[in-house]
Amino acid sequence: MHLDTLLLISGTWMKVIQLFVSLSILIVLHEFGHFFFARLFKTRVEKFYLFFDFLFPFSGLLNFALFKKKKGDTEYGIGWFPLGGYVKIAGMVDESMDKEQMAQPPQPWEYRSKKPYQRLFIMLGGIIVNVVLAIVLYVAVFGIYGEDYLPARNVKWGIAPDSTARAIGLRTGDIVTALDGKPVERFERIVPDIVLDEAKTITVQRDGQPVNIDIKPGTVHSIITGQKGTFVAPRIPFMVGEVTKASEAEKMGLKEGDSIMAVNGNVVRFFDEYDSIKRSLAGQAITMTVMRKDQPLELHGTVPANKTLGFLPNIEYDRHFKMETIKYNPIQAIGKGFSYTFEQFGSYLRQFKMIFTSKEIKASESLGGIISFGKIFPAEFNMEAFLKLTAFVSIILAFMNLLPIPGLDGGYVIFLLFEMITGKQVSEKVMERATTVGLVLLLTLMVYANGLDIFRLFKH
View 1: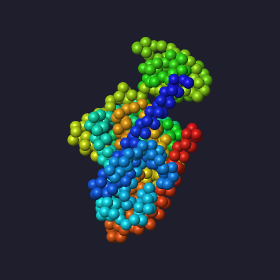
View 2: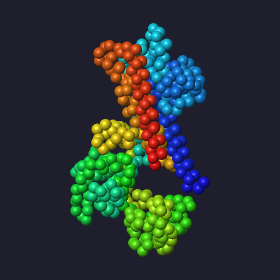
View 3: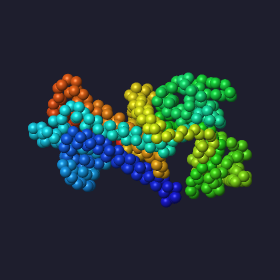
View 4: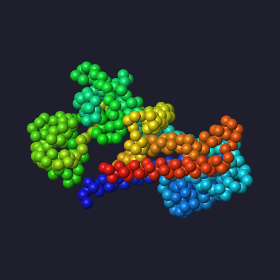
């Protein structure tokens, strides 16, 4: 097995480990939110489990735990089915579907004996903790690391557009200045703002003159499906980054830090220029002139049929551009943590809404399961990235649990709001049937989303 294959595997395992740790932390804290408010209102909690000790959503199938310990009235444990977790609150219709208990008269320590507002807090407890956790993590990130970004005005060599961007009229070297007439401040916000706001026009500086370019129908779809590339990237001088072991690039003698000056006699200054030349040389000889420690060298090789020599360009933007860094004192970090959390919540809400409202986005191309979650984590551990991603996943869990689907927290909240407004409690029989339908729906969505992930793996 080649070293680069081993590195790929180790990178994949690093993603898996980060996903597992992040989700485990978030599940435990989400369930603790329910647990906290239940105990606050003197409600008995019979079980507190990370993962399910049954085949979700069938509470009577394959009932066993990897670990369990009884303390007081509560059994704490780790289940075998690693998708979620739960707390079993006495006197509540939930995923455990304990009909025997519900057939008994209500007891003072049970959920159904509590006042509506108390039950509301118990049901919202997990969501509250998820939001608070996201705020705390963002406060820590901004307080410790600050915030770095690339101002769009500092992308001095303009953009390198992919084929989707070129198809709508963008050109190499254009400097993006506005979307729908609104000035662009941060370069990394260009693509997300085009997608989420479904912008209609891009304004660029070209040869010193402003040019308005219409964003054609189908552009957002191409960006979302990732079939073409990155849409736009900063145009950077061509410097070699990581070289893959046992690749053609390594055989040629190419090393990290080399600056490419020419390819087959053609002067090359930027990576996109090299990429354009390389595409026409599949299976042919290639000669690279590079600068290494201020010394010119000629390196010879052959471009493989797949047009990949086996190295990455150096894209450390702070090496090529003037980055902006914002430092936050503790008070400012708290304010930024709050505002950023709700910005991210709003951003995810817009993404979710687009699945149902946008003509260019299909659920089959946008939804994903556990594999899609894993891919958002980097192949190498970075504490700042881990904290930010965990905060973002916490926001996603809060949002998804707030959906008005029976079996999710939001479904129970709808029933409670109905009771608080009308003064009439929804019958336990209706709750049981609604919860059963909701759990089956959740299982169907879970199978569908994870099935899409598996299909994409085989497709690629």
